[in-house]
Image (cartoon, rainbow, N blue to C red; front, side):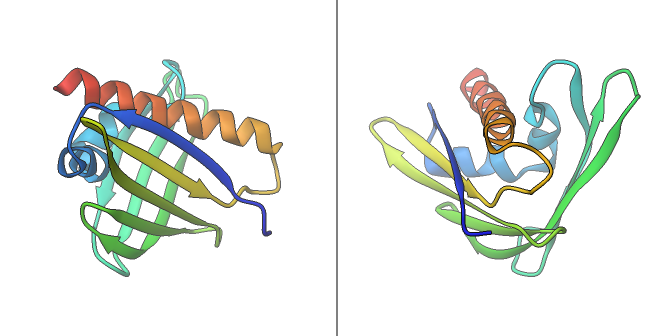
Length: 138
């Protein structure tokens, strides 16, 4: 699939701080959710090329859950990382200084099971949750 989806958020943090909140398992567990009825009870990060990333996503009522996993292909702290998802799709995230904050941009390949707009909205909601977490932590 050649189509890519881009989502972005600006956080009130330096690229180093934005990177740490994006890659720390403890932080991921705090912000990795698209809505309040979901949560991330566990996350593991082996932040190196060929290292694994796995975040457990579960509905709070316990009715549904899944592991969101992949292997890091590129790790250039605090500027960029690329993750190859377990289903073969690629995601790339960059951290660029903008004014007094950092613009965090993720570009990802959509999957074929859900409409593109639904995927964009879900990933954007998770990135917005990340931004809210970073901005609260300052």
